[in-house]
Image (cartoon, rainbow, N blue to C red):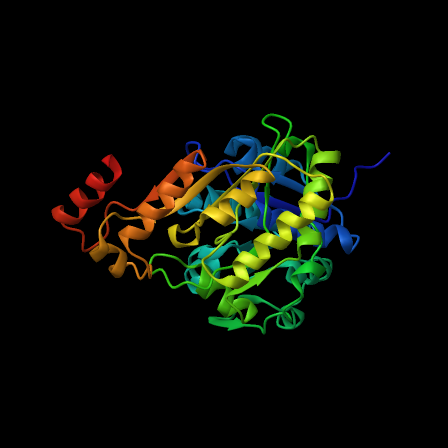
Length: 364
């Protein structure tokens, strides 16, 4: 009996330490697109599964895939990611190798000119792109490479970019592919109820990533689609806690609050109550909204404070002030919601006064 043929091998490289060790949803969405298209694949989420680089390289050595998709999410992964790309090219010289993620999306020229093993860089959302690349990898030809949407590649010494795929209704995108290994240890799963963010924080790439690659800063899923995905995770993958990892789960806008009401109503209607966490800005926190979310299971909030200095918040273009932080923390304290705080203590123009303002705020 011959070896099983795997057409595509998807890899998220290892990460040093335990920084945000959760499943890579971008990779899972791409895997789901391959599954829908009938393309066989293997997935190695070394970042989530704490797989060593040596074990990843052994799997690559043993693979018979013709397409390798490598995701670069965090800057801490760059060295291991480059080693993996070089190794793939060494042991599979005719393979198609595509690199995706925020860093490659914004700087494809750097990666294409410096990482010699790459075939191309995928920029933006890659669900459609990966399926085209799977077909291309069966009969590689630079002429057909130029017809694949959403990539940048080198033709001789010139970098060419193809047009982006048509932006899809976010509810039409299949749920991310899941593996039982994702949840067997902690019973935790990550879910997106939206893509993007419409704020303008100077340190963040998310709004520009979405404007460049989908034409809009923010898209949200329907309450029904979110509830369907959560139900599937609880019923079929033994998940006991959901981490909603939207770049901006809720805001102060009426549209956002209406979205929260619809989501909570959907959970209530289905009799769903489960522990979950969210990530948001201070000015999105209100007693009414947080109480409503707590009633369906909200158990933790990650609050992006960034600074306790109005001067620094203005520098960061956060479009809020320290008093917004205080109001949000008062609400969360009143409702007894455990809260983690995100702080950027230093930046290129930081001074001692700014730093001590933030430390004083945190102490208070």
